[in-house]
Image (cartoon, rainbow, N blue to C red; front, side, top):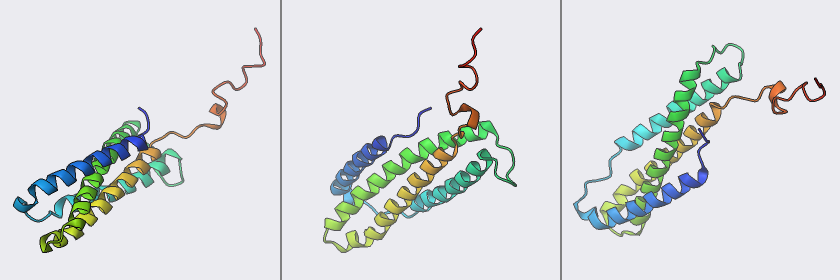
Length: 159
């Protein structure tokens, strides 16, 4: 599995921003106020993934007092991190598109929805950062004897 590409996250966020702008400009008059529940969920996920990242990094680096690492759990954390970073980028872009449209709309209803849009961008970006940290924490550090590509001690010997 390859590390998450920042360019993929940026493109996904920009596409979601365009969709958010278009949807809000077409349907804002019929929509209720922007909900806070998704923002709370994203913020909670960001905190959970940050805690997982810290604990996983300590376990993989064999820091004192940390229990052994379960390889299957680390694989699951890596998949969670990849999915969360993309979901966070999509939600951040969508919220940014909403925020941009709301900032240009002169109505009181639009001004009332700005805090939810700002919080959506912040919570989604926090999720992206936490997910990328978790993904990085799941990497196995290079062992000192493997830094030369696993060739230690065999180059000078001939049969």
